Structures are given as structure tokens and as C-alpha cells.
Image (cartoon, rainbow over all chains, first blue to last red):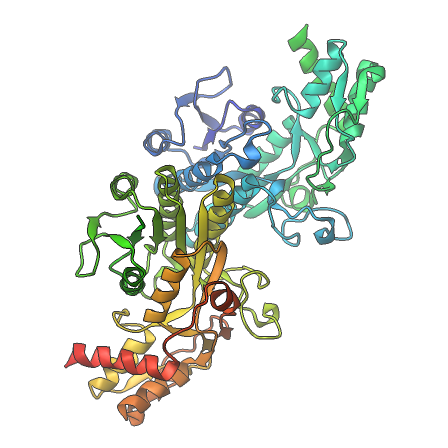
Length: 304
Length: 304
């Protein structure tokens, strides 16, 4: 029996991962602070920052697989949220408990923020690569994810647990937090309001959250170890994304590029997807245009 | 009032640190799993792997300073002990609790095992340097110490806690575990038995534990942040150390160099002590010959 315990199951990425795990035939135990309207077989309401609750849930679930997504995610604040320390502790704890209870395969959610984004350290391809790009996180969030990843990979090898770290790039799509780029631009334009963004020159690897969820499910369902980039492999500027949304909605005149302060967090962050493609056989379903149309449709239904 | 909470206070390094902290006028709260015959003002018996016990002790101590030394140290086994994960969690927890309770200065004990010991990455000086030598631990122990150090340094900056990580090289001296190099050779020779060691070509930075304790106390008593090497700055081969001990005891004929399997863990590990010397003003009291004479005297008293 393949039973997966998914933490952060009601979150933006969690919802998408549940659908993809379901499609692969997993029995799903979901956990989050509050029960939510998502497709799981068994729901556990628990705050994983409380170690006794985490222990109770891991014991009750008796899962063979673990997808640990829960972490502090407060928009704009998570980069330097002191709770990153507690989430690192909680992550180490849940994987330790899971292995003790006979779990065989664990995937935790890392971030492209674990890489050094300084252009000088990015190879000739301009892509961030799991093995060759230095990890030198600029934020507490990145440092906490990196420390947790490194330790879990080393520990898992020692105790014989199959484990991987998914380094997420920039997922967008249904259920994204409303203050973030895609929902913010789409909702302003859908309401007929001006949509302010930064100069938007920074290049990011945007991936539709359904593709992100499918890649996570493929990683859970594999024996690939160490860290794996989860991205599209293509870079787009923030201004491109906003302009594409405005084009879909035919409201280019409401876009205010440069109205918000510039984002200083490095110029380019694009995934080398060799591992994702070759070792997991993963091919994304959406290109940027198709993915943004899907996201705009979601926000249109939500705001009408 | 300057009150320091010392975890692992009854251990080999802990005992030496207590004496040096006392000399600097600190009121000392010590904690370890079992009470021991050491010089503290208040003793707390607690297992820091139990989070409720850790919380109880940190609350009770209300210390302004923290020196966190407790970690898994079982000789020969700690390199790959799965408990390294639990000790990383416990370390993050105790520093978090300490800061929440108003603590102002925390020092945790790291290790030279956090560095990449491959000679290719060591600079022209042949020394391991805090800022420029890559951290690429070869063991779970090193990975756990490195992950914990990185995260604590990043977190401390965010929350405004003054914090440092002491990267210990190779302390030796009174109360060292008997299976380790110096006690093993000294005790065999004192008993008139053959003393087997490896070929002993690997170069290590040996530091008398009293100097190590004094350096730790100086670090606690400072505002120096980030990681600081705690070593003598001089490399000696393992064979040199054994030969020096044999010379002190005039039992060279009992030394069996090459009788044990070779140590494969890198050729040289010697500290760049620029930070220790210039930022902490620390000067070691012992050279290798004097330090080994002190250690031999300790074991002579213990075995007679």
C-alpha cells in the first residue's frame, strides 16, 4: 500500500500536489492547521510547530511516503520571519519521526532561494544547477531551507531513508496568495483598476502550480535522491509576465510598469531542469501563455 | 549581572570552559544529563534532547550568556550517529528559547569537520580559514554542525541576538575520553604496554583543552559574530604527538606506529587563527610539548 502524508496540504502548492498524487494512485493523508476543502482520504488537523501534534499525526498516518510542504509562507514577510528557525526544527522532527515509524520515502520542499543568485556564480548556460551552483542563501528563509536540506540529505543516507529535496522556483496559478505578482496584476485588471508593478527586469523561472504539483508527485514516486530543481527551465521577466496577463485581458493601458520599487534580489533565477526531465521524465503541461490564461480564468471566476 | 548557562558542562571541553568562565567573573549555571563534580554555582540535571527539559532549564537559569557544548560525542561513533539530527534540533531549540527569555550572547560549539579538508580547497597557507575555506563536511556530524551553525548565524542576525560559532580543532588534555589518541598512547605507555597507532601521517591542529576552554570563554565574553576557529594555528602529525608522549615517558620502544589502519579523513586540518588572535586577543598558554607533559601528568595520577 502506498500512502502519502502531505503536510501543508491545504496550501497553494499542496492542493496541486494532492491532485497529482491522486492521479498516481496514492492514498492521501493531509495535514494542515485547519481542515480545508481539498481531496484527501484522511484529514489531520495539526500545527506541526507543536512537536506533540506532529508526533501524533505521524503515528496515526503510518504513511510509506512523506511530502513535507508546511513552512512559514506569509507573503513578503517569510524571507526574514524568525519562525524559519522553528520550521527548520519541525521539518527535521517530522522526517525523523517518519523514518522511525517505518516510512520509506521522504520529499521536503526547498527553494531556489537556497542558491547564490549572484550572476558571477551562474554558469555559461545562465541556469541554476543542483550540483554546480553554489548554495549561498541571501535570506534567513533560504538559509533555513538550505540548512534543513543539507542535514536531511546527510542524515537520510546514514539511516537508509530514501529522500529528496524539491527546489521550487516560482509557481503561479489557482489559489496563489492574492498579494503575489500574477493574482495581483490579474485582479487589478479584472476590476478595471491600474496594476502597479516594479520595473520588472528581473528574470524568474515561472512554473504553473499544476506542473509544480505534478513534478512533486513524480519526485515522491521515485528513488531520486538529493536536490532536484522544480521549474520550467525557461526564464521570463516579471514585466513579460505582467504584459502577457494584460494582453490576455486586453487591458495593457492599465499596466503601470515601474510604479513599485525595484526588486533587488538578484537578476536571474532560472532552473537547470536536466534532473527533472531526464531522471524523472517530467514534461510540463503548460507554457507561460497557456499557464497565465488558466490563472486569469481562475481569478475571473473568483472575482465575478 | 553576567550569568552563563553552559550545556555539556561536565564534558571534556565543558570542564575546561567552566574554569575560564569563572576566571572572567561569570556566575555559572551548568547543565548535563547527570550532576558531576565540577565548579558551577547552580547545577541543572537535564537531557537537552527532551525539549520540555530544555525549556525548564533555560527558564530557570535566566542567563545572559549561553555556551552550548552538548552534542553526541560517543568516541568513534559520533561521526555517523543518527542522533546528530536530534542534537541539531535541540541546539536550534535551546538558542531559540534562550533568545526568547532575554539572553543576549550565545556561542555554540562547531567543529573543524565543517570544512572541506580536500587539500585542493585549502589556500596557499595550508590553513583552514573561516571565510574563505569551503564548508563541505564529509560526515553526518560535520553536516549537522554546519547546518546548525549556518542557520543560527542567519537567524541571530535577524532577531538581533549576538551569536558566534566556535569551530573546535583537536583539543587534548585532562578528562579526554580514554580511547582517543593522547590518553590511549599515554595510558598504554604508563602501563608498560605496547601503544599501537596508525601510520600517523595526517596533520592536525592539537590544542590543550585548557587553552580551548580559555578561548571559548573569551569568545563568550566578546561580541565577535559568525564562526571562529579554536586551534593553536600549528599542525603536528599524529605520529609526532605519539612520539612526543613516548619521549616524555622515555618509552619510545613501546610505540607501534603503523599498527592500526590508516586514517583516511584528509591529510591536514590546521586552523587559521587570525580571528582568534586579532579579534579576541587570544594567546595559547601551552605549546605542544608543554601541553602533552600536562596531559601525561594527568593520566599518570589517574593510573597510579
